[in-house]
Amino acid sequence: MIWIHRNVADLGVDAAKLHLGGHSSGAHLSALLAASDWSPCGLPPDLIKGCALVSGSYDLEPAVLSARGSYISVTKREERELSPIHVADRLACPILVAYAEHDTDEFRRQSLAFAEAARRAGKPCDAHCLPGSNHFAIVEQVAQKDSSLHSAILRHFSQAGG
Image 1: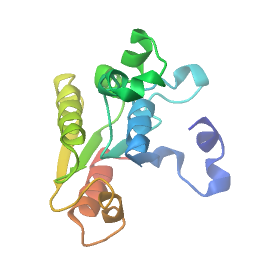
Image 2: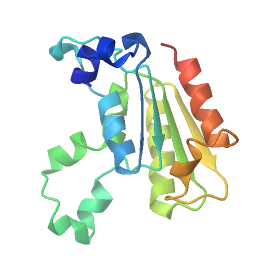
Image 3: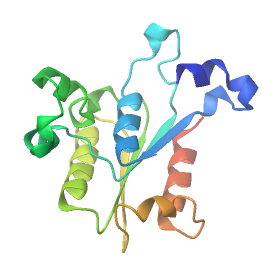
């Protein structure tokens, strides 16, 4: 984000209109970026104007407790700091949390729980379920103009400003 902000003119991008999105692990990372304080880097606190999160994981605890815990080496503090659900109060932009009807139970649970955590923290948040889709097919819907997800993302970014 720092490089992008500093090079927006060369990229032909308007720095006042930076929106972010990600799918799966990319949604997890995008949520953390949306909850980051950019001021120590000399960047505006509202650097990211809106964020679209698609079928992400927002709580690392289940992964740490699973078989993957044998190779995910984080402290309890790091687990909380790297779990967007625990830093939802730091979100600096409106978010859209999208998930697929046929995502796993855990992806759906985490999506709804994260959206609720954001709302409880008083942050603007919309949730969108894409009917008939799954974790892998949902990302294709982002670019399909007749998709309800495509429309929801465009509407979200338009309302988020920038």
